[in-house]
Length: 130
Image (cartoon, rainbow, N blue to C red; front, side, top):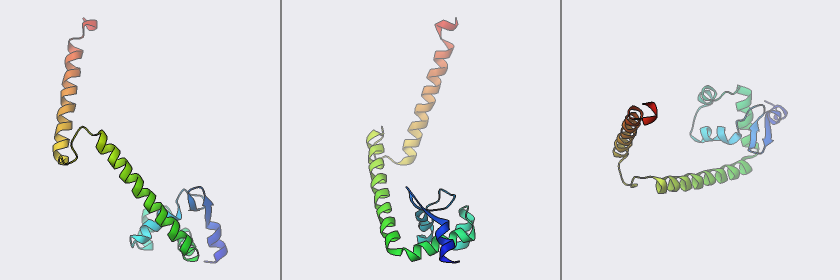
């Protein structure tokens, strides 16, 4: 594939370099490349043509330093956000963090069943319905 064709298939967007006509960024494909997915597997997983995927590989090769630097920054930011929201969810959870997931699930199901029973009781004894 010529560089001109590859360059026309990769466009700069606010999300970073993306495949023209899609919302797929080079970094999204890079996740799969870093996970050692084959080109065939990537094509099965993502709605891309062979030319589009080849353009991503060519773009990464031609801009390797910038792409790697941006990719690492994205990964760091993603981890920061994941940690932040995990802490927020833990702080808001009515369950202690060390409680096993299966025990939490049982308690949530019991609470849902109790709420459902309470609603049914209220519907059956609603003075407005009498």
